[in-house]
Image 1 (cartoon, helix red, strand yellow):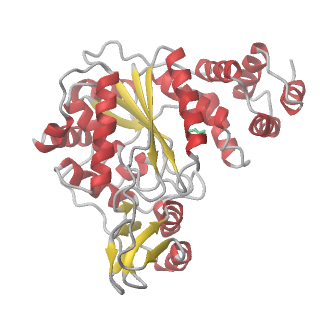
Image 2 (cartoon, rainbow, N blue to C red; image 1 turned 90 degrees about the vertical axis):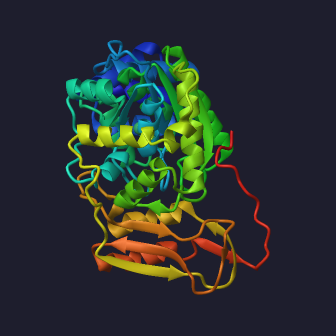
Length: 422
Ligand code: URA
């Protein structure tokens, strides 16, 4: 077998054999296939696709490239959630302790942000002392004691995907449904969760810009999970505007704590509850009442224990930005658009995200929203507050938010869009 013949197969719109897939994933992981060859292969897949059999085999080969975790020693059923990524998507933070408080165990292996979408680990690292890196033994022990753990995936889990995702990121080949589906599902299946709820985002701030593409990605991932014995369901949810009222690391932790305290923006609460119900149902936990767990403080209690178990101080003040800049409404009327992608870019330029994997992030940087689409606004009222520690970043962020919103005539009717689309 050789890399050139595998590349030619897909370049010429052919179907890979099982042997070709097994060989190329293994040889790439071992360094025998070069990055430039894999980049050419990824581009051929992006342009010409893979069928269901090929995607299933590709996923299985990536799982087989590393270790598989095993949670069978736990007394509770496991349920995990994966979001395909969006702006202001802090849902994992309140969701994991909430589902734990309702009786399931949540092993949440999360990532860092790259580009305009934030990363769960970057958000949690704004809590003084909190550690993302746990050994497999530590992870299992937090999961056993608290019922929820959010940590970085170890190097042993689907190493083929680690190499492949980093390569796709710099070669314009992230946006291929077969590659996204196999990348996400290889990690989730190797992680060993019994059930999985996928939050597939649709809209300007998401990978998938149309509901048709999101549906195809969702059904591909549900098929892969089901074929590997993981009870998998997917929700398609709106990402045309940021979730909640904050985008940025410490800002999003603060909002998540508000949700756990029984408050918080209604879209964040609604989506957290919808995903919690799906996770508990998929895990077979009967008679759980996530709304009650938010109201009676049991979800907050699980959050505090989860943060403390990973070295964090749940009572420590969160970092605040050294500099702020307020963007005001240009006229009186109804806010009819506030674009998720533009706000994500602004938060990133303010220092909340990174341009390269090794860049540091600013804990306090980001964007605070003072109105959401559908709200009435008056000329001169604050619309956005930009936060950063480095004021030279304001210019780039202001450029990103210019044109990111529309204020229409007073009295304009604005349809209330559901957060869960399907
Ligand atoms: N997230 C992943 O883990 N992989 C992808 O390919 C895209 C998003």
